[in-house]
Length: 195
Image (cartoon, rainbow, N blue to C red):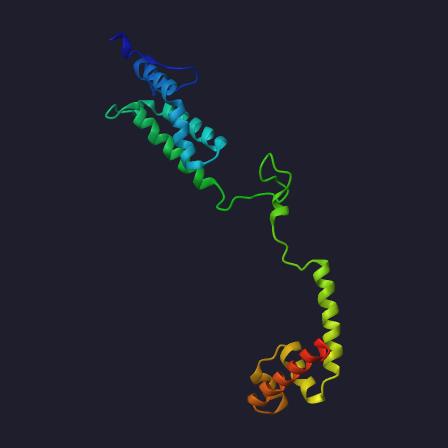
């Protein structure tokens, strides 16, 4: 019955008594199972530092509550469930969306950052220059159209009105607006081709 003597550490409450046998078994199980406990935590958190924290929290909690180990299951099973719970707690504390700095490198070997891989929604300066030039040509060509066709093109394509809205503004039928737009486009196309 010498094995059943209690082991009370410094600063530990005498009410919480851990048998030497439980303490030795705990140390033995931890030394043998530490790698598998770490892998278990890593499976959940997918981060080496968080996995280490989860295992450390689990082992500390298990040691503090070693007196609650009933022995109905293996100690490794008991520790594994505590590690799992600690890993899940780590996940709950984590923000839902990971924060990635735009200046972080994607890989250690790569020379470019996250911001280098993001698509720029704005057109390039060359495209902007071409669009401005085209718009200038188009505006000059539109001024050469008859006043009726010019109004229809301005309302539909420059002001962005629908066929129905343009018809209301001009006080004509929608079919008339469609015909005028078609005629204006044909004339602009011919002007662009130099015909």
